[in-house]
Amino acid sequence: MITPMRLRTSLVLLVGLFAAPAFHTGASAQEGPGQGYRKIANGAYSVVAEVRAKPGKEAELRAITLPLIDLVRGDPANLIYFLQENREKPGHFIFYEIFANEADFEAHNAMPYVQEWFAKLPDLAEGGVTVMRMQVLTPPGN
Image (cartoon, rainbow, N blue to C red; front, side, top):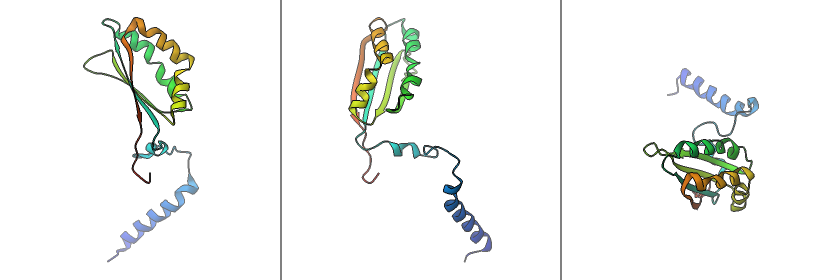
């Protein structure tokens, strides 16, 4: 049995559902659980990269690497960029990046600020950068 309270609640929800687009506030499609994943297409080009500081160079490597966050995220071709540091081994960094395709990633790597960062690595990092090139997989129909 539908009570008046339940009917009113259902109507409020329906009105909100249909009226929401009319009152769009400019909120990003990324708001809400899982919404940001929609912009990542199946087969998108992803990279997991790793760099380890030489002993005693952890702070220097961190200092030259942190500015990359805003620079890469400001690149319109970049879809996702995370820089992470191992809590148990400071100076061990993992990068997670997603681009629509390999050409966008290669263009990113050719950017002057990326090339400047690479040029500083021989003094600060053990063995340079290890890169794993991946593709994003999504369920059928997404």
